[in-house]
Image (tube, rainbow, N blue to C red):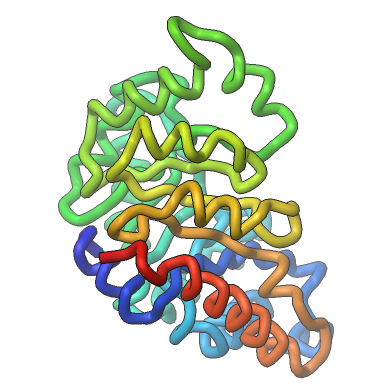
Length: 271
């Protein structure tokens, strides 16, 4: 999916909601465990309930990889089931040198046909640039994250600012706003206005709203741009909103709440 298609989808749905399919087999409703593929059965129901609300789905591959070949089969069924007009994210946090990164990119862009993959930039340009070589695909680079350990490196002084600022500015020079996004954690609300000044045109993938306590209002007021510019991810708050046979309806109800709030923030901002 290219940038204009994503922007059009945000305008059409009045939403920048990304639903995180972090499907923990130990948390899905018990009645699904009798299915041949319980993880896919759960994902299918969540997708059916939210596919007209969400503009993106993010699959955290850890929840699938840990199940071995069955997990990869669930992942493939899921990515194939997501409507083609919705943006897809492989949250795999890959990042290695040269040829290895090229094959990571092939894995998620060709074998599984995701629109984007999250990338760790610690090893530098040759760990990121192979992901930028694919037409209408995106690298989503870790910028400023929500976790407690972000202070260990990201928030340390570097040059004339903080390390995360140097990393994001450097990475932005390798790609464009048409093929690179950045992860900016929702609990880093105080920093997002500064990040938006550094990168006025890039999209930000924002995890941490909902179960992690990030403020959708703060993130939206400080991070939206004329194209939307945000994909705000909610995982547990939506997919585990219910735990019985009505779990998909409960998920839809929460997703609709996010969409309604997002519509208010988009009004007068997106052009």
